[in-house]
Length: 169
Figure 1 (cartoon, rainbow, N blue to C red):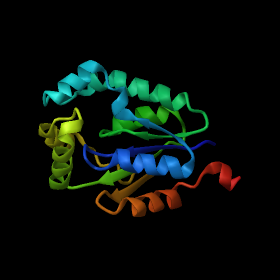
Figure 2: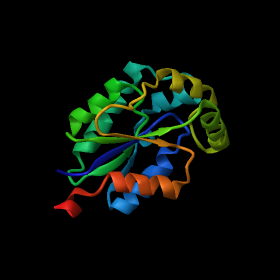
Figure 3: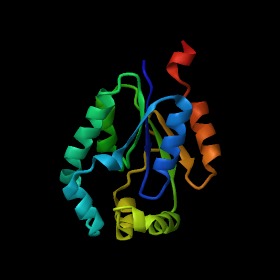
Figure 4: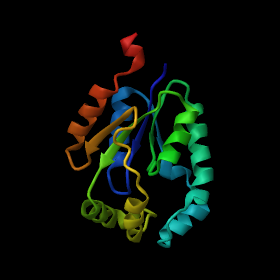
């Protein structure tokens, strides 16, 4: 069994920061889901137009390919807002785990606004992210964490929950 982890949640919850910290601590590759959006999807989001299931289809396919292309495991940052998206990712690699960074609308809005000068995601889309989100709490292999905790604390909690398989062998 290899190690695969998705850091998920709405825009502004801290997926990239936590993903980088966990990947480094675990010695795993990090794949930023945002880096794999098509130019058309990026343009759509920068104009404040929410993606629909059809828009996300190719993106999810690409992310599944990334999971399969890293047989030694990896950390993927991906919103994974709907259960059908998470199931699609789970089909790519059995045993895939998710860390759900839970954040309030207000805090997510503030974080997305703060990064607006350097990120393609429009602040007007935060509400649509919450409307789309299907809370994964209760699904197998999901750890829910409060996104506003200090990064070091979040990383420690993930590492305690997600021990590297090769270290256990």
